[in-house]
Length: 102
Image 1 (spheres, rainbow, N blue to C red):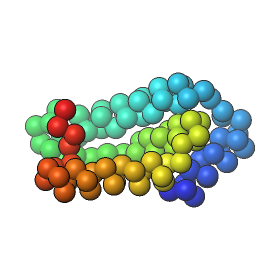
Image 2 (cartoon, helix red, strand yellow):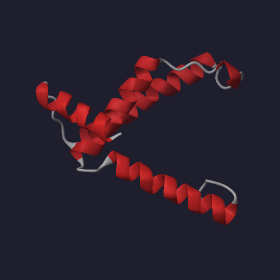
Image 3 (cartoon, rainbow, N blue to C red):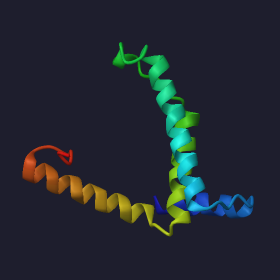
């Protein structure tokens, strides 16, 4: 992930696409909305979950937006993922589920 975050940061720098973190977050939410639309349409509004079809292009856009957000907030995406995995491992060991229970 470190390499992917670095590649995104270089792309943003090379193409003068710098944006404040709030805009990066809004872009990420927009891209996730496009994935949700893919899911809604392909599953007939959830009626056929096995028919899920997500656009690789839209998924790539969401990953780009997430890594650009991480970079704009000086967050190491790889370290954040490691922390999340450790948290889920601990929850699984304690409760048998990965959810927070909230």
